[in-house]
Length: 110
Image (cartoon, rainbow, N blue to C red):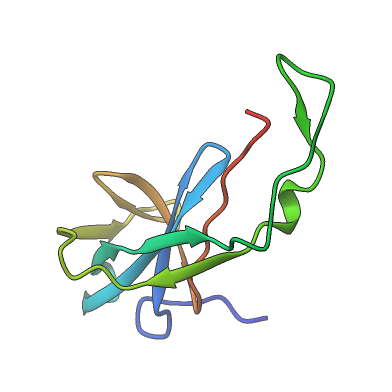
């Protein structure tokens, strides 16, 4: 699988510790600067987290099977993300990984 670049990617998913939030790339300014906007991610109602005893309250045993639907959010603010020397894009929201699809992940075990 080839790595996505600012010119080939359609999304810049924000990585926040163990959670991931989907962002769409609105505009490519250059190979080092992109404009992004957070998307609306809705948990698929056919998926329900399953908890067993453990941890502080419980442990979600099927969190890797999460399913989400995604929508553009024209009301969300547009942010700039810039490429740093470590090869990752960063905005005021943190680190973003480029992708050809949106990704949402909520860590129920954190």
